[in-house]
Image (tube, rainbow, N blue to C red; front, top):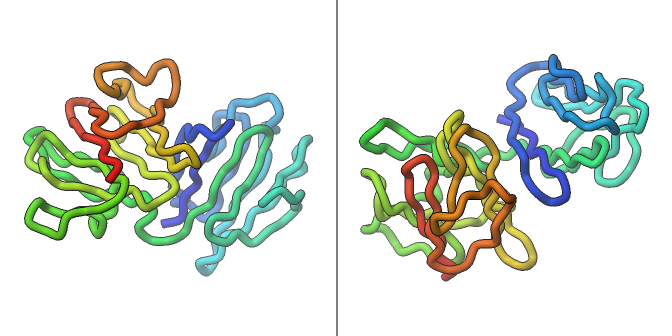
Length: 214
C-alpha cells in the first residue's frame, strides 16, 4: 500500500498510509496529512489515486509544492519521489514490503514491529549479516531483522513507535508516535534522535531489541 514518510531536517516524524482515493495535505486539522507549519497552506496539495496511479496536485498554495526539488502544479508520483511542502519532506513509497508491518507474537498480543516478514529470521535460519536489530524479549526473542531500508519503523502503533533511519554516519533512532517514549540504554528519546552504536539496547513499550552493526 502506498505511503508517505514525513520528515523535517532529516528526522522522520510520521508515516502515513494512503488508503483513500483522495488524500489532502495541509496545515488544517481536517487534512489527511496534517503538517502544522506556517509555511504550509491550510489546504496545500492533494494526492489522488486512480488505476494504481498516484497524482499529486498543488491546490494553489502560497509557497508551492515541490517534487525532487522542482516546483510542480501536477505530477504523477513514482516510487521514492520526495514531495516538499514548507520545510517538510514527504517521501512517497509504493513498493510492497517497505516498512510493512509483520506481527511478532508476545505474551501481551501481537506487536506490529514495522518489519517485513521476509527479513525476519529465526535462530535456526541462516544468520543475518550487516546492520540489524535483534529481538531480546517475548516469544519472538532471538529473531533478527536486517536494516536494508532507508527507514524502518518499529514498535506498537498507538503505544510506542520509533524509526531507524540509515544515514551516512550510521543509523539514527527517533520517536515517531505513541504515549510511551522509546529508550536507548535506559535513556529516553525525549530530547531527539540518537545515533545507534553496536550493542545498544532499545526498549519500545516493554519490547527490548539490540542493535548489531555486523
